Length: 584
Image (tube, rainbow, N blue to C red; front, top):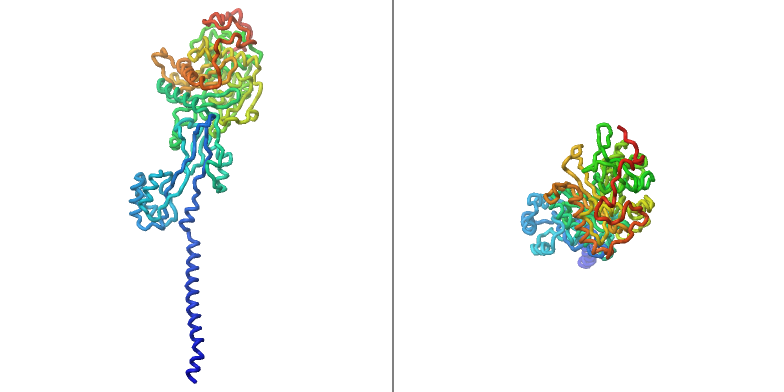
């Protein structure tokens, strides 16, 4: 009976044991589950890793002939997960053997912390990556990324700009690209590569860019200038074919762009452009109807404003016709013309030419012009010959281009094929007759005036020189100058405008001790033109145009070798009331 009872209770006994075992397993799995949840809520290394966004691909940048200027290449970045580092000393020793430039103290501190993620080195080479993998350091990994490469080094650096370590644009066209939508794609976390993006085609021509840069570098060295800059602009559509500012930088080393002397002098620097402004003054005077090509202005003595006097550099000491005033670059005559037009009309004309407003282009870097807060008659007199108002060279170039291209003020562009109509800021800024008169004077200046050293007869060059004394500590310096030259080609139907600027060029024995524009900026521009013009779609003249300026009434026969027969001396008897009276 007892055995029967025990036999009856045996299944219940074993069942209890089974339940106990099952409970133990349940508790064990519950503990594991709780631990997994706890681990899941911790700052996991992979979660910290994922919180750092990878560098995003960018479109290629090419010149107008599809030559690559900027592109992405495969790159690698090394990171560490300090919580997984087993031996900090061993990890530091291994990392510094591959990357000897790492700071040992800082590295030891970061690897010994409790953080989940830290960068070790960005943008490492494939060879460095392979050496690191061979060491097999626990807690150290490598991530695939992209890095920006500029295969032509400093070429067009101030236009291209640069990117930061995360491949985001921080200057120049690179920053502009981000502002066109690439930054939004980056923030959205979309995954794409450079082949998914259309290349950005610039208006630049790398061949022209290189020639301009090479000639400017030689000029800066030859004349011991502290800086130089240049530009080639298509006056018919505003496309910039080349822009150089020296000293420049290599965008592959973007930190160099932060040096103070690396600014873009064409679009950021503001300068008194000197006598190149006389092209605007002359055009304004002729367009006003107050003056014509035959007008005569008294430049026989200084123009006085109280204790101030306006003089001519190597003046003629006599009355001058308008063409003579342009050729001899007379400050006195230009001041008289501007005063004859009037202060308000002068201001209105320059504003219409875009000289009062900040010029914006695709380049984020630009500057406000410096305009006199209280514009007086003296301001008009001095600004007439390029002193007392500072603008960016790109602004001044845009204005002169509008005077010779038929009267269209066109916002410059660095992107090939940018719609033309949307960039016309003003039309008919001068009449066609005034434009032709100015082209005539610029050509005459290349034949018999200060621009002779840039003349290339088969290309029919025209131009206007400019030399301005720099302002140092609030005063005009007597020996530090900025020289500039704007050359147009061909002068009868301009297609291109060349700008050359030299900052503080020095006199040389071969310049007869002079350091004005005609002795440095002009011949440099001539050298640039000789190299560049054969590359451009502009054919040289086989023979001189027989009647290049048909509506201009010549003072004498066109084409004389000497200046006097072309422009006869004006005399006092021909001086009529063509200039405003001067206040004592």
